[in-house]
Image (cartoon, rainbow, N blue to C red; front, top):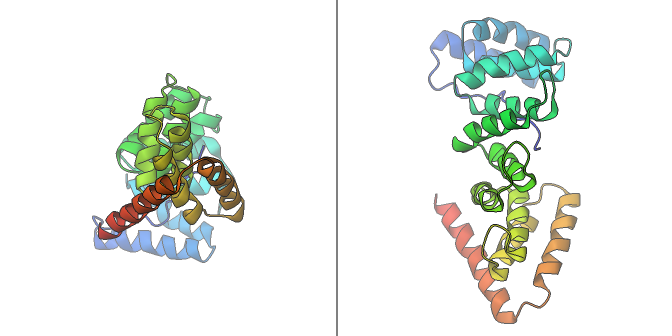
Length: 235
């Protein structure tokens, strides 16, 4: 699964001045690497029920930053925040269930929490849920559902999802086979790859998809890429 979301930059829009100040002070401390101070500032807010603080406290316990690592305590605070609808907490709690970190391993619970976060537009959760549908872990294997969630993450600009969606179009898994659409998505994945390793892999996939494509098909794919970028820039 995709790694957890680091939630230190939580939304403060609806916090009162004092609450926002404490959250921001904790964020500032964390950015300086002073996680012990961040914990001292966030823990009281978490105990008062602030979901952003709860997610941040959970992350510090999960990673052992400013405190001794305590996965069970991390699960406790992720669960509190997730229950309040915090998408980062929902995604991170799903990962805890997926790998059995601080809680009994339960892929079905993982899928449930990934879906809650994915429904809120969380890209990591959309990608993770798609992978579960692909593998049939925690849910019935469903390539069509996998393609739908890969598409949502791909439309949001995620290169890993764009790569996965491209391969589904190449093979006709969960979608009608469309080599032009496949090449469009793999082109975007190559361009947006976050590391050289990923770029090399995506380029390998791109070369495989391009084999046998006509000049007209390549031109069509290029036009779709330009259209996608134009529509995304306009949002």
